[in-house]
Length: 176
Image 1: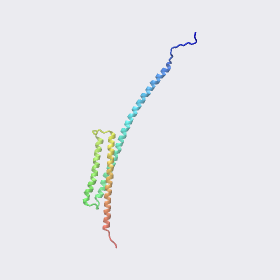
Image 2: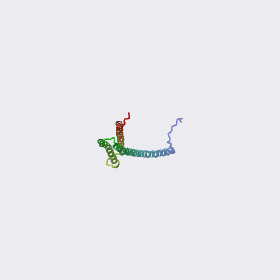
Image 3: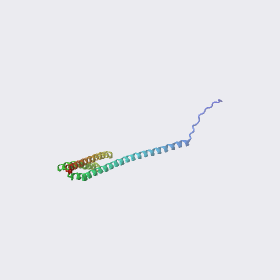
């Protein structure tokens, strides 16, 4: 007999390792499935946050528009009345002053009507972000109108002040 004996026997499988591997794969599949559900949930929540963010931007823009228009109306109601009632404003200037302030107020009212249409009608087929962008533009326009009307009232007050001073100089008593 030779000392070299080779034999190939039956391979031996350890079923416990195979079962453990199968269980591990099944558990990984469950975790992957849960992870995919979590990713989908997070995507939905991101979209919801974007919608809420756009609505908040719209509300801020509308609030700012309302505040700016209130400033415009207050200026016209109080300051312009004082300017027009001043004895240093000539009668031929009253109509021109009134027209310039009326133009600003009409633009403000038209902007409010447009904003109302944007917010209340769905026929414009806008997304929330497009609507927020337009509202932001209208907000900037209203800020420009407030600035414009503030400059106008300041200019007319300076004119009145100058004329008042001129009147005092021209009608002063000479004591010498």
